Length: 162
Image 1 (cartoon, rainbow, N blue to C red):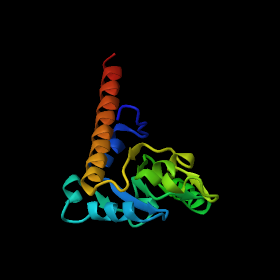
Image 2: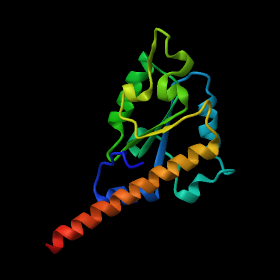
Image 3: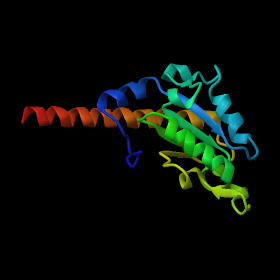
């Protein structure tokens, strides 16, 4: 998680790590990962204990979760959705299709993984990944965001003392 680039002030990063709003973007494919993401957001796994909630639209989202292979048409929609999401924002590619295109990668309309369109901060491999693995990975991302906020705050304190 050390190579994740967090954008924002220590305050905004700290708030994001405590109460992230997820926006789920399903591009299609077999919908296996889509089902697992939705399962991870049910009371059985209780994502709200970590403050994780679903955002109604991109303007309220902090983290975009991408599932499925990106086609030319869905790539443009993902790009627009990414631009509409306010900073600091993070993108999570869930499943092998969102990471590389998987079995659809040689199709004429598939552009490959989500990182061909937007910067991806976290990859969750699997076909499909288990709901607990999805939730655990998002929690690790939140921990990484919190650590970055602490680093920014410590650097600011050191600079003020000098």
